[in-house]
Image (cartoon, rainbow, N blue to C red; front, side, top):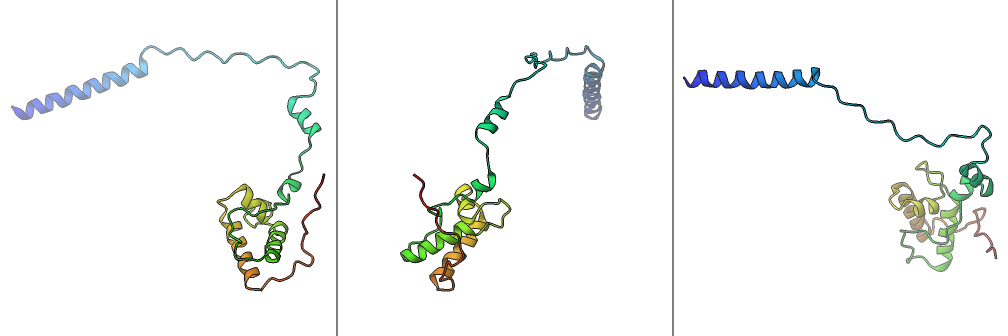
Length: 149
């Protein structure tokens, strides 16, 4: 008796499930969502758009931004370097480019992405090379630009 009760209960559940699937597939259809509100029509002779106007008034030179001079290199402890070594470090950090693919100088990459392990490792190696005397001269390396103003 117990076994036949379980079989009957399982059959009832299967029947209910089948009716639910059939109702969902063949039941009343839902109304589709109304279309979004219409956007204002574009005139036949459009004037300058906001983006075009902004681009004309302030052209963006990404190479200039990515090689912008950084007076400090964030996240790298240079307290063990004397003033001349720190200046050497900043010059190299602003001259060499990061190899992570960002296009920034090492100093710029670290300023824009503190989590970049590539620039962090390269900057630490540069600092250590300057501290141990392996790098002593910045001849031919980018110098700090003159202050404007």
